[in-house]
Amino acid sequence: MPTAGEAMDQQHQQLLSQQDATLDSLGRGVQRVKALAGVMRDELGEQAIILDSLDEDVEKADTNMNAMSRRLKILAEQTKSSERAQWSIITCLLVVLGVLTFMVMSD
Image (cartoon, rainbow, N blue to C red; front, side):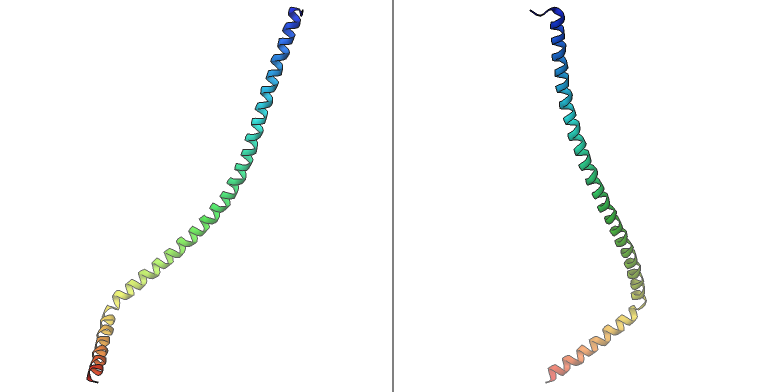
């Protein structure tokens, strides 16, 4: 029969074994978290590159849109100033249409 000291030693050894098993399990969990963190870091790096590229494309598109907007504004201003010319062209085209219609109908 084991003595009280031996029983205590045996109980202590069992407790240490349980702690070792728990620590091993915890260590494996930490390794999995570390691996996931590495994957996340790589993915975030790739996404940062994609976002930078997208940002550059958006800036270029914005610049082009601003330039096009300025051109359209200038064109609109020119159109306002040449409204009389447009009416003259429309009148001439109507006269030509009338002449052509008369020629077709007279045949």
